[in-house]
Image 1 (cartoon, rainbow, N blue to C red):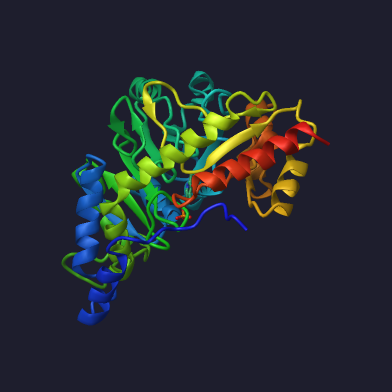
Image 2: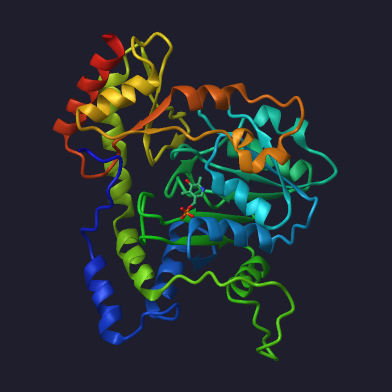
Length: 369
Ligand SMILES: *Cc1c(COP(=O)(O)O)cnc(C)c1O
């Protein structure tokens, strides 16, 4: 079976982990946590990095650091992974959904301002499957309405919008190092920010809000979201190879594109000319003219030893989030992406032969009932 994703740990991961074990530094204090935070923030061209347990906890800390309260509204894309919405809900704030636009699959900036109310406090931008969002337009809207900008850049480590790194646009931004992300710690996340105060507050919230003078007095509800030295050791080794990993992701996408580009039953993933898509996952759309439905295509691939995944289900369709759906709001682009979308094996160790085999199997599946 060709899996959808497999982490490739072929750098200094083992060496650094053994160093943690040999030196007994296995908790969340240790030189690898500090090095990983510094070097990752540096990679994003951002001042501060605060490592934690997951992308979800990084996002939770990011929203909590902004001091949002019950009733405050945060605009997020409807086409995203559930964690984007959960981070907002955890703080008691209200997520407000904006549909995707059909070309890049990211939030439709033309619809954002219609959703802004007196209660809106922030916009969360999510570069989806590795394709950056329309940052110029989003930054403009946040400045005009005096809103915070949060990036959930979990899927776009190293993604570039007009030569600028994703994760460097927002007031506070979050990344994930889950095992299928561009670089991994197994599980892990990072908040990055240029704001000294937000960085300090994030660090404080991350570790129980210990008081500086009276250690065991806690002024606010804090969290315990530490990244261990062992996780950071893996992350640091991965970070050393991040550009190599992205280059491999891009050449994988290029190979897929070359074969699939002119197949009318299939839409290949977008890349605007002013961005660098890091192709976290190589996603395609199975168009209605396909002889087999998207669901059938997935089954055919599976029978032929190829794993794949459907696209995300929209936030407006999540039973757990139904109280946040505004009456009359429609999300036709998200619904269509959910119905047509499929992502193909996207590991950096896929061979050209495997990609050819996947494409040939896929082309047969869309052309012949
Ligand atoms: C993976 C992901 C997250 C969550 O990251 P975890 O490390 O799994 O908690 C959040 N947002 C997006 C867009 C993701 O893809």
